[in-house]
Image 1 (cartoon, one colour):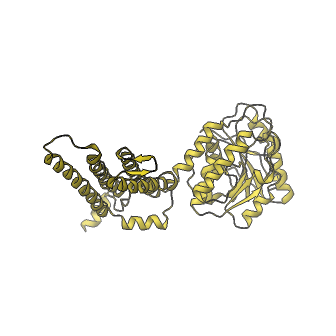
Image 2: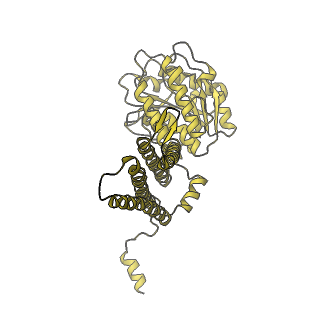
Image 3: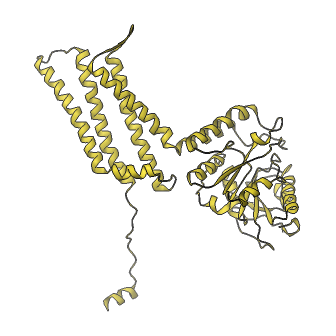
Length: 422
C-alpha cells in the first residue's frame, strides 16, 4: 500500500503479534529486526515506503523490536512502520516475531542499520513473482562498500561458511549469510525455523534447500552501516554457531562419509596386517599399526551407525527429509537383520578368542610371541566390539523409527456409555 495508507500502530505489548486493521491487504511486508537503532531505523523505513510508492506495490513495514532502550520505537512508528515487540532476545527470535506479525504474502527481511538499500527491492519482488519461494541477496555479486564488512568476514568467514553450506546441502547460494532476502511467508513458516540467534540466517537457507523450495539469488549492495556503536554480531561465537548448525543438519558429511572412509581403510589394512607385517622400503608396519587400524575400523563403524541414528531421529522429528536412499535402507536394515549381522560378527570375534585360548593352552599357559598372538587378539576384539555395536545400535534405531501412536484412549462420557448400553 502507499505510504499514506500505512497506518502507524502504537507499540504492541511484549510478545504481541496482533494485526491492526488496515485499508489494503499488503502484498509485501518488509520486516526489520531492531535493537537500539534510533540513528537509522527511520531512514530504513522511509526507503521501504518509498519503494512501495514508486512501484505501486501494496506493502507494509514491520519493525520487530527486541528490547530497544532508545527512541527506536517512537521513530519507527512516526516514520510509518508498524512496531511489534518481541520479548525473546536474539536476531532469529526477533525476525520470527516479525514474520509472524507480517500480513503480506511475501516478506522481505533486512537489518535496520541502513546497510541494505530497501529502496531497491525490485529484483527480489520480480523473482518472487516468477515463482521463487526464497530469494537471497548476494553482496559479493552486488558490491560491498569500503569498510562495510570486516576483512575477517569478507575474506574468511562468509566465503568459507557459504562454501561449506553449498557442499553439505548442494545449494546454489553464493552468500549464505546475506541479511537482505525475500520469501513466501507461508512457505518459510512451514519450514519450522527455530534458531533464536544469528544462525537463523543459515537455518533458513539450509531448511529451504532440504525442503526443496525454489531458491533464487539476486545481486545486492552492502553499504557501511550508520551505527555509532559496535555491531551485535560476535565473529567467532556466531561463526561457530553457523558452522555447528550446518554440521548438525548434515549427518552424511559429519558422520557417514568420514565413518565409511575410516571403517573401509582401517578394515582393509587390518586384514593385510593380520596376515603378515608390511614393509615399504625401510619403513615397517606391524602389530602397533594393526592396533591403530583396527581402532579406526571400529570407530568408523560407530560413526556410520551414529549417522543412521541421527538421520532417523531427524526424519522422525521433521528436521530432515526422508531421502529415497534412506527409505531403502530402512526397508532393508531391519532390527532382525541388524541382530543377525551383529551375531555373525560376535561369532567371528569369539572364534578368534577361542583360537587364542587354544594356542595359549597348547603352549602350557606360557607367554606367547606378541607379534603372533596380537594378530589374532586385535581382530577378535574388533569383531566383538563391532558386533555389539550392530546389535545395540539396531535396537536404538528400531526405537527411534517406532511408528507414532494411532490408537489413543478417549474419555467415556455418561451419554456415550448410555448409547453403548442401548
